[in-house]
Length: 79
Image 1 (cartoon, rainbow, N blue to C red):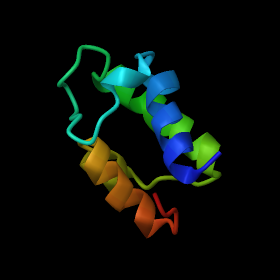
Image 2: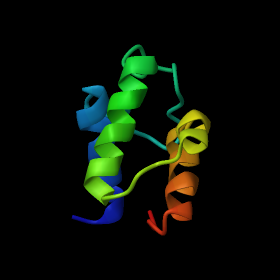
Image 3: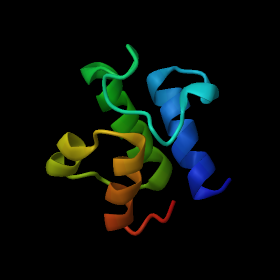
């Protein structure tokens, strides 16, 4: 599985949404599933998939699908 596929699957599994909803323009609170609880489930899923620990500031800044890719880049995860 590529990093992009793993990243997308973290959204699908973490937020419990259909893969068709996972797109570059997806943002926090754009869909009901990506609320504060969904956000923490998503972060946990990403940490597990990529074997990293995301810092609190990055968790707060993780506001969109696109921003998440930038944040993961800090952890040397290329998406």
